Length: 215
Image 1 (tube, rainbow, N blue to C red):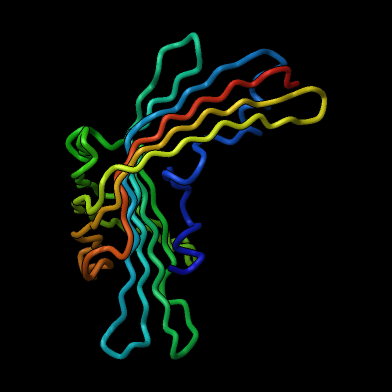
Image 2: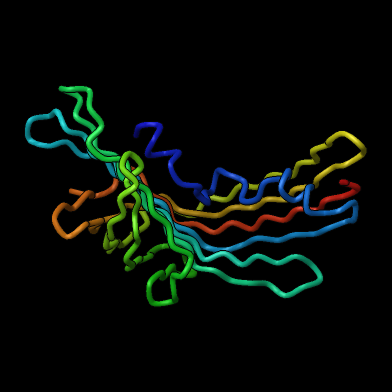
């Protein structure tokens, strides 16, 4: 997977923190603030080549249903999905398409993730933007995930200190399974996911930040 396809969209992953401590610190106004973010997620990476072997297509699909809560307030749940598409001609060293798109309006029927983290499905239309030209186009995402491993669990506790006595406590827990995703990401002419995913995951992340003494 090339660097563009991995980095073009911000993803919620089992190996990444969900929130930025710098963003939380800047919002705390010197008080003690506690923020929690939790929810299930899916990710899938696809790579394929045309018959000539010259044209490589890298596609990344991600979705999550996360609940954001800043205590003592109530949580707000949002369904978010994103896609990135990169088509490259290695024989001519030419980028044919670089596009990214995101939606934050996925409803319960558009994103389904089982409580056991063994199956998931995403059905949504996302408007993508061609980074080179600025043109927009719709892609239909119809994807299903099936787990291929037992659940693995991980956790992390950190205490990051910043100038002026500011520090941020982070408590992170993640559970998930490896998975294979199959389906289509199509603009109506081309399916950018020709075959099952190279990598995939179904998981859930619970992340909590406590911001103390930050200006």
